[in-house]
Image 1 (cartoon, rainbow, N blue to C red):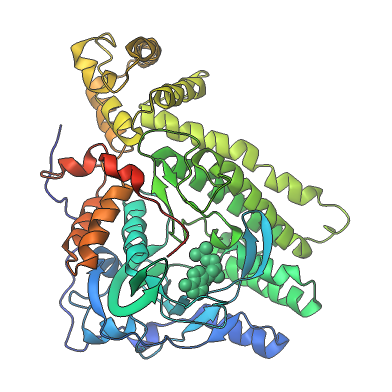
Image 2: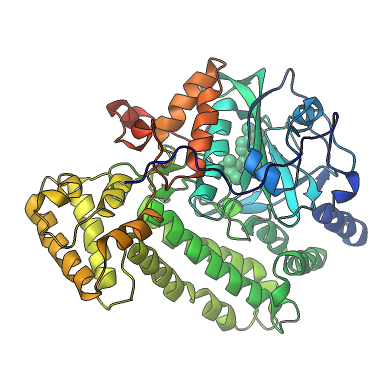
Length: 524
Ligand code: AMP
Ligand code: MG
């Protein structure tokens, strides 16, 4: 097995920043802020509230993501003292147009009314070599949408969001990114007293299903016009290939159906559980967004509920694809006012929505097939994959480790051969493993699979490292004592989750017994 030290990330080294560097002010595009200004002036319908962060005392860098900064064309050593203040909500760079945005949504299946950026602050949108990117702070203080919240985020949950954003990116899963994490001694009350932190999130857009729901819900003509403007904005800037479509709202829904189905298949394939799939936490771009009580499966349990507050298991691992569909239905309802004739006949919307029922299983089977190392598509592949999952479920076998060990499966040997012991020994019921593995073996032989080549392909899609709760917890406990080195180490490790790294065996191992006692809730 190949063992590599930190694999270098491809971007070339940027030249160092001049003293006092900040992004050039003419690089800020701030198109969402302009959309807001226009809708506010023309329709008297705000899309948010311009405002600045609520200052946080004595911020410190916890970690930065240099790979992302390089991708955005920023120089090395960009993270200077001014940047620290800006990315803690205490100052602004020239050219920014900070604003908190308003959205609504369905939470746990119920219409929740107006929500909005209660603790997020869109700093602005900046042009970059990877396209225009919005920068958003999470935890920068109260906004008009904070309701009873304090507008803050605690260090614990901010470390989880910072690490998981980059871990998902490393896994190749669409996600908002995280550029920086800063911490302050400012006390924040949750179940206990904790301290404040700010994550700088980066994405081409933070528009959620809930933004559309917000303007669709009231039914007022001016809100209808704002909804139309939002659709036009999203198409123009994020789906330009759909412009000029004779049914733009249907075209957008179609695209979001596809992206969401594919995203759900990707989540399932790495055992990721989001935890709070409310419609306000669903990205119109099909990105993973709003990391809260998420979790990765340890021992495989399809009914696994990662969010301690989700008492009904609405967002359990095996429910996620269905919940993605449920959320798309809410989006379809929000887009209905923009579909001519939809008040009389919703069939065109339903037809687009129902494409999910074919798209998701197709995407999912494709993912399982790749994870099993199967090349050409065969009729029984879906069944073979499902039976592998059943086998893991029956034995409560570790999801990530089982897939990774299966990469080394020797199809030239019998399942019971010592060559297959690493994966076989994960299963107490050896006979059940042997029965499934013999089917797998025959399937591989039928496509003349070469073990070494197949193993290499499988290791590109079956990660060694995922952000298990206990790993995050270890980094959190150290950080709470003022030592951020474990956050930085995990951040580096999770950028290349498919490559085994020397000295990181424990990060790839089974979770320790104490991991079972970790409870992750909505409290963040
Ligand atoms: P979430 O479940 O974290 O996606 O949050 C749902 C809503 O509650 C969003 O509108 C958040 O902005 C808001 N929210 C969550 N936590 C806070 C907080 N500490 N202060 C203000 N608003 C919050
Ligand atoms: Mg949210």
